[in-house]
Every structure is written in C-alpha cells, then in structure tokens.
Image (cartoon, rainbow, N blue to C red; front, top):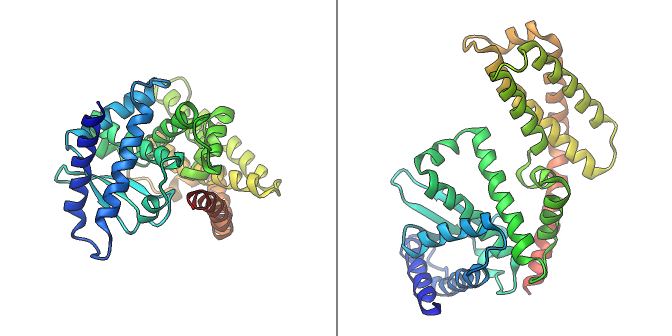
Length: 324
C-alpha cells in the first residue's frame, strides 16, 4: 500500500515540473517536488481508511484517484503570495486541470502543519466537483450565486476536515480554530463573512425568498415588502454598532443584501428592457434602501478592507510563526 502511494505521488509531482519549467528559472523545482510529495503522501496517511466524515472522505477519494491517474497537472504559481491563498484549482478551455501551489505555502509546510492539509482538502473539493459535474461546474462558476455556493461548499468540507481529522491530532492554528468554531456555533456564517466576504445567512434569505416566489407561495409585492423591512433593519443595525468585529459583520450583510437585491429584482420584474430608474420609480422605498446601502459601502469600503487585512495578517503571522 505504501509503495503504491509513493509512486502515485511521484507521478503527480513530475507533471508539476514539466509545467513549471516555463516559469522563473531561480525556483528550486527539486526542493518543491519533495515538499509536494510529502504533503500529498501525508494527507493520504491522514485519510486512508478513515471515514470519520463521509462527505470529506468521499471528496478525498475521488480527488485522490484523479491525482493518482494523472488527470490533474500541477504547477508553482509565484503570484500566490500567502499561505492562506496558497492553492488554487484551474480548469482551462483545453480541458486541462491544474492544482497551483504558492511558494510561501510550500516553504511553510511541515508534516505537523494541519492548515496545509486543510487548504489542500478545500481545493480537492473543487476538483471533486469538477470531476463530478464536468462542464456544468465550469459554467456554474461564472455565475455569482453558483460560484459562492461552490466556495461555501468547499469551506464546509474544509471545516469538517478540521473538526474530524485535525482537531485532537494536530495543534490548530488560529485560522483553523476560527473556522471550526464557526461551523459549530453558526453553521459557518461568520466564516463565510470573513473568508468569502459574503453573508451566508443573507444569501440563503434571498435564495429562500426567490424559491417561494417562483413556486407561487408568496406574491411579488409581499417579497418586496419583506425586502424593504429587512433592508431597513440592516441599515439601522449597522448604525447602532461600534465593536469592530460586529461592524464588519454588518458591513458584509449590507454588501451581500445590496448585491442580491438587484439579482432578485431581475426575477421579480421579468422585464429585460426595464431600467433600474424605472424599477425604483415603481418602488421608491427599495430605491432609497439601495442608494443608502451604496453610500454606506462606499464610505466604509477602505476602512473595512483595512480591518479585514488586520485579521488576515493575524492568521497568516500565526501560521508563519508555527512553521519556524
């Protein structure tokens, strides 16, 4: 069993260096080949015959099988600057599938570094979804709602992996601890806010409203009335907060609400030639909410981006300190 795994990992990493030769010549490809070999092999050791979470295990097995059968290429991407953004999955028009690894991600990897396995399993979920849905996955990722759904799904797999495979076996970083607590305490809503920069609760609020409208369980006018009540509540809640963490949460709620407000109105009005000015003339309270939210977003954008950057710097610095 061990011999089979080592051979499979070697074949995978070989395709990395076939591609990476086109990149900067100063990169020590042999060094990173060994690191990737070790990362993939050690993940297989964690996951082998361990179905503590059925959905995580099924995700791993499908993705790992594709890796072993050379369905996936790999490469080093020097543009992936941080550990937390250290991996991506890309599907090209040619049908080629690439797992990309950042240099900092690889340089900070240690066998006892759980965060690296968590990030890898996140990208394995994207690989799983592509293998399962093919071109439909690629098309769906171009849609804002579907793209968020896939990212939320991968975040859930990552959180389940942390909870069922890393917790108790690895010393968790601050980021992993935050994600696991979010899974346990609010079903990942706060993790979605800070990692995906979108309110999961707000997303599903719109999703459920749209489903109820399309299935004729609620009228258009009632949907709009509910949206206006909720929108005014969010604006009022934002103005009442002072704590930086809560303010950021409220900011993302408003940002998410405004985003899906326009999306759901396309469905509600069902008139491609209608302008937003015309829509807001029919529903002036909705228009006022939209413009007031836009004002808040523009006024707060830089400050909230700086606040989020502080959070990410804290998470990143914590990971780096553990790699030394």
